[in-house]
Structure formats: C-alpha cells, structure tokens
Amino acid sequence: MRVRVLGASGGIGGPELRTTAMLVDDDILIDAGTGVGKLSMDELARIDHVFITHSHLDHIACLPLIGDSVGDLRAAPLTVHATGPTLAILQKHVFNWAVWPDFTRIPSGQPFVRFREIRLGQAVSLGTRAIAALPANHSVPAVGYHLDSGRASLAFTGDTSVCAEFWQEVNKISNLRYLIAETAFPNRELRLANDSKHLCPSLLATELAQLRLAPELFITHLKPGQQQLIMHELGECIAQYRPRMLQDDHVFEL
Image 1 (tube, one colour):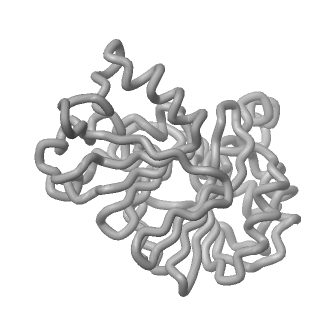
Image 2: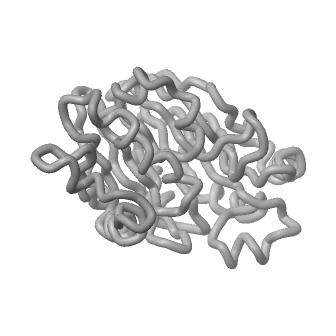
C-alpha cells in the first residue's frame, strides 16, 4: 500500500498550501480537499473510492467536482464512503441541486456517484487492503481512519479534539507504523481550539500520553501562517515523539 499526501494544510494560500487529501495507491482517496486539484484527468478517472472523515469544506472541496469531471470516463460510479450522518449532510447540503447537481441520481441508469455507509470499527476490504473508521470528536460527525496493508498500518486522526476512544482503538493496532495527528492551532489559541474541537500542542501532548505504541508521528492541518510556531511548540512539549510536519507529496509505504 502506497499513501501519497496531496494536501495537508489547514487552509489555502499558494501552491504549497492545499487542504486534506491522501491518495492510496491509485484508486482510493482519504478525504477530498483542495489537494485533489493537483491530480490529472487520468489520475482522477482511476479513483474508485473516496473515504470522507467529515463534511467540512476543507475535506470535501473537490468531492463534487470529481464525479462531474471524469464520470463519463468511468465504467462504474465513484463510491463515497462515510458515516450515515456525514452522508446525510452531503446529500442535503452539497448534492442538492442548489449547491451542486445530485450526481447520486444522474445520469439516469448509472449515476456518477454512489454513497456507502460505514460504521466505526467495521473495515472495508479492498483487495489486500483494509480501511476502518476510528472514533473522533469534532464539531460535526467525524471519524479518523486506520489503513492496513497487512504488513503495516497508518492511523489518521482526521479533525478531532480530545478523544480517549481514538487512542483506545489505536493501541489495538499491533502493526502500527505511522500516526498522522492534527494540530490546527498554536497554544495561544487554546480557547479557539476547544471551541472548534481541534487540537493545539498542549492538547496533543495530553492525548499522546494515552498512546502505548511507538509509531512515526506526522502533524497535519496546521493553520496557515502558524506552522513554524506550532511545530516549535510541539518540539518543546512532545520532543520524545520526534514530530514532523506532514508535507505535500510525502509518501508512506505500508
């Protein structure tokens, strides 16, 4: 399993700042933020599955565009996997004809997009790969993801605040090699982090105290303009984990 980071920023601001999206091999997306925009038409047409963590715009910005752009180049609909509450939000507020055509219904006969509900802890098997939703605690219904190749695993928090249930599940992953954790704000914005249900360095430090494994740690979803400050603060409070800022085009081999 090869995981390529297409976008890892908490916002936009030039070609180096693209929002959350990861390409798994050449046929799966984890989230569909603005990072998807760097893919070619041929690459987009090869994507069969999109796993959405939650419905916020920075994680779904390109989702409505994918089916419309390459739907007629594909032999089957694009499958969007998410929890029931997230699918309901997408249907009501995005694929609703007012914001975007409902490509789960058109073209008639074979729509360009189809929804598939996932549940916490139930893995979706795609060949030798397994993808399972992990608990998260955000301002809208949300999950993280566990990607397992059989040889090694990657865990992704998605957008979250403090969530003991996430760490309970992660600690069960015996082959965990990589952990991608969000840290959206610096410590001076602790109140905003709590209000919006994100993490800052001091909160992540408290969360990591629950981790019983030793994966490589990567930090994602940093607020534009605050990246250096956030990483500096992380270096002070969780130096033992050797955190690295996730960068576009980083590749994880599992």
